Image (tube, rainbow, N blue to C red; front, side, top):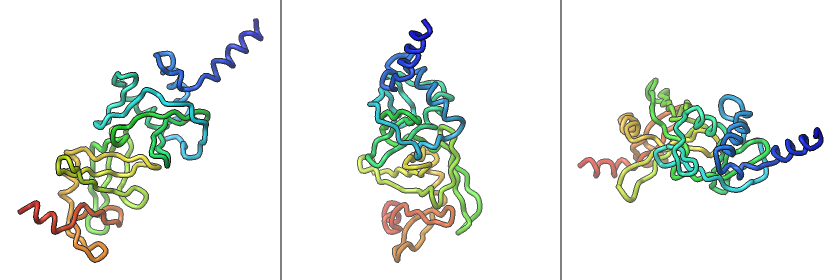
Length: 214
């Protein structure tokens, strides 16, 4: 009996994350992710085997879905977010020391929902808080970038949180962000840009802003 029990436990321990297609599998995934501890796990140092894709998606508004159902428990979302990694292939994975599974991300995995500005000029620092609790100061290592929305003519700012994972700056926060913009000469060209952490991040050519404001 003891031998049979040991064999059964070993078999269960070898199940991959791809088996998480029901509540039991999700609980197993939670258990494995929990071993990473509090805060982001050192996923960049882990190189486990790819175990397939999981039916999990982060929608454009930052809502996490599992099997088509929103994950309503924020502690659970924060737990999953702590083991996220985006690889050079452009895909996003949940990573533990022994498993790596793919998930879908509609836009960015995080949303910057709040910002704070301290200092001014070259000493200005813009700090963001994400929907999963990350706090990031834009600057070296955490650059801002701005993408034109061709469909709407709008603007989408992103801030790098960690690794290759970015946060999309929520629209209300984006309006607050551009209020701190100024005309700055960047590489000999007049740009409307924001400063943070000793860096200047171009939003658009100053001439374009003038045309839009006319």
